[in-house]
Image (cartoon, rainbow over all chains, first blue to last red; front, side, top):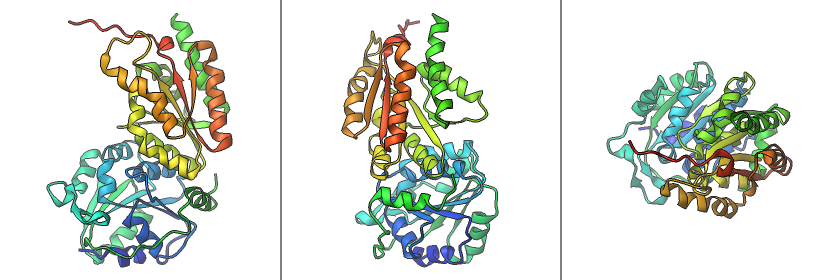
Length: 189
Length: 175
């Protein structure tokens, strides 16, 4: 099992300038912000289920950048169909990392479908994202970095991680318009 | 009649071209099909077929963040799927444009279309979406143009309800 916060921080350390990072609501956003304030990040704090479609639109609009989405199994399960949409509108520059702790950890750790019979790697493959794999160990860091920066996407990586509540690390602002404008200032239109 | 029907979708397409709307997402509806076909033939427009309308909200917002303007096409029944997703353009003040082909109103045959048809303007307004409406084909182009400018100039959400009167109520035949 991966300890999610240090793992996310490790991925963000030494990040390349062509990387833009989006996070799904809840713990994924606190994880992302724990890596330090960076204008090239945009974190959801609501609109559950919308992080994958958002990342798809961004990746289509910015094909010269590498787009990385960190999100949770709960957020992903809410919009499973979006995985099929991603697969059928190929975006070579998009990597989705599902931090799969098999639970809704922020609301009392109720189990998600991935705690039961659902396997998001197989969902992704069945949806048509052939570059999909599961990692369970920090040692898979090098493979993931290669996927994020070099491999032809779309890719979906399931990172099995501990279901452990972590401190909330807030973004620069809770005001979405401030956050998105800051993020957009790092993009050429 | 066929030519006239084709014309008002052409008017929407012209607005897309004029305002540089280069991404069009949809869950298809027969009322939008001629417009979808026009967009699919256009190499400058990416057409994204969704599995649920709400994903078009997030897609549109991500595209805008990346510098591209888009529109979501859906039937009135899809509006209900979008409600919570509409928080995203609202709180981020991202322009969002949707064109909604109406069911459940003008001579509707299918009772199941009526609840969401009646609810469509109400739920959009409940989520702070500015609602425009076109009842006649002559006003489609100007209404879509006005709604798109409203959205992109004021960073708000706008919807155009396209009356079932223009699209025609399909009368189903059993067997």
